[in-house]
Image (cartoon, helix red, strand yellow):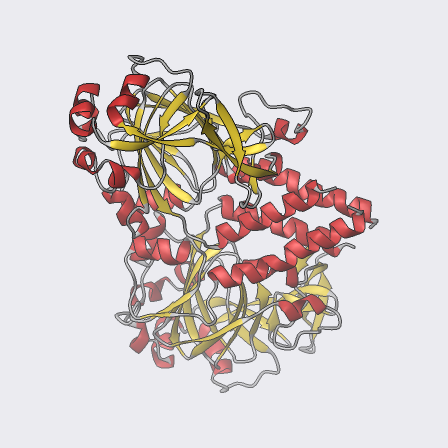
Length: 317
Length: 317
């Protein structure tokens, strides 16, 4: 076989794989469960096959669902100084002007942040409490008793506790760009709604990555933002594509990818499996809490690494 | 990148994968469990990551361990006509003389078979009760009460019953050639011992397959065997390599594969995960019962299909 033909055959394997994975494993839309399944059933039917689902009646007993009004949050954590991601455009951790741009991490009293979200104070910028370092337990321990420190049936299923519990509250303009995490993610919406656009890991051959210089938004004295390179930081791979408005001339492979979209409403929990690509939007002022359980680095992970290696190699041509 | 360089890079991904999978996921030797784990633990720690183990005290309560003597088997199933695989060389379902050769399936009273195994009658041929069509439930229902119709904790873990329960009794010369099955396999040794040589699915790039004309051993009037082609049957892919004596000149890639070997003794159970390659030998007259639970055709299976597709493509060069 000539080398050209062999490479076409390799491309053929890589192109057939996402379709076959979809036919065997992925749903047409994200299924709903009426209640949390048993730990064994959850592991077998969802975690092990790496399938997303939305679970109802998993958090309906949480006091947070009724308690977390603006007045209550102001009372309990109002004066506390917390970390808020601020950007001029709503894109934190995203590709902008050929850089991977991280937000300004502004330390401010939580009540000042609420004033902005509630439009009592006007700002041209976009604010999002989204610090993913277990900020619920680290920055908002007063709120933990209104939710749970872990999801008991998930901890039993996985045989471990979550690595992080994160609190999210932000403006409608705040968007999370397409990316993936090495966590099994239980994403619980307390108020408002979150809009997810998902791709299974098997869509990797269709999803572009490029290497970008890391940079951070710095606010100037006149209030405008400048993008400052993190000069000592190595370039990071990130996805330049906006799945809501994909540039198919630049990334024609993406036309073959099939996003799954879903809206997670207050009181619902999304199981977002490890290594699934996700792009997230929200209703204005949406509050959410999510649990990150580290994934297992087993054969499934090794296979993903193989897929990643092959995708990069074939793309270099 | 030139095409030659791209293909070398593809080969690089494929060669790195088995090593990385081994480092992350596979043990140096098959681990032992002192007792059966809970269904959830078994699914999480062994089935989902596709890892083999040997389980002790899982079948120690089976009456078969003490009851299944020659005298008892002769009494209970002696006159019964059963299906026995007969070959001149011990290799049933294996590559021989450039064909995929299946055994003569001889119908004979079980006691006549026992006479041969116990050398009360001499035969130049090799006999093996190994019919894998749930022959324990189909041909030996009298014996089921001495074992179990399923393994309850495995059935609970997988949420289903076994597709087949097989009974194995054969001579030391009877060898099972290297192959894989799409089953989660619980292999229980009642008496004697079985010697397994295993390769994880990630070793696929190092394991040769060729296409062979199916054929069957037919016994002639003078008692000698002839190999008769199954003319209407399509060619089947099979592994020509003998892992105990690999021809590394013909199959140099196999030098990079790392077999795991283990001996499963009477009273022990091997969990042989789906898609693991296995080659099996046994002590003379070894009796075993195994449970085949159909595997899940999920993302792990799709990934294996991708690996298989790529391995075939790259080998064609």
